[in-house]
Length: 178
Image (cartoon, rainbow, N blue to C red; front, side, top):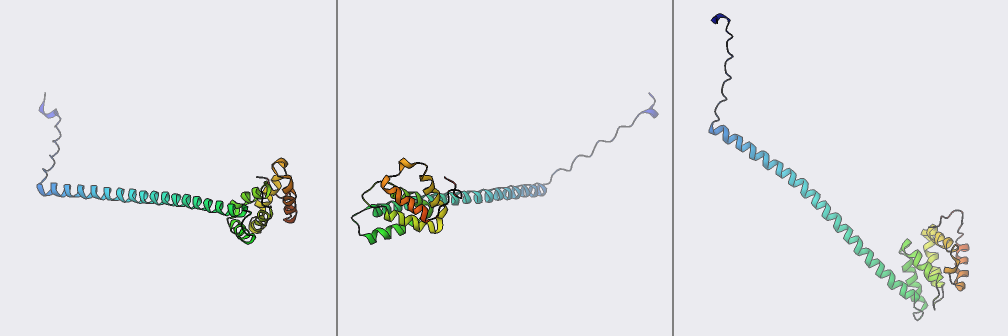
């Protein structure tokens, strides 16, 4: 073949420069700084999330402890209100304290007013009156719902509950049974 028609080969690309020890040391330093930075950021993010999760769990545990203590205190007050041997003033104080538990005390007081026991329903009715100051709709809902299950009420106490329903002006159309 004629040398004039030969295609010249393209020159080979130049070889990359050989890394010098100084360049290798700087690359290694940059890589270790990048690794350390990434690990620090990930660790900081994870630590923050772990701390937040621990605080949330502690809050839940504290709320549950408070609920248990509250239930125990309510049980003590209910026992005082139902104890006919205690003086009337002490029972009325326990009723007032019990009504401070708000919506949690509505049903226990209703049960005390409706069930047969040696103590009269007076204190329980008074407690429901106190609760009706702020929780009238909840008290009325329980009182009106009791009309639907007449056999659950003690015949003797049905009159006291009906009188309280009338006194509080519980409107059956405005209240939704639970």
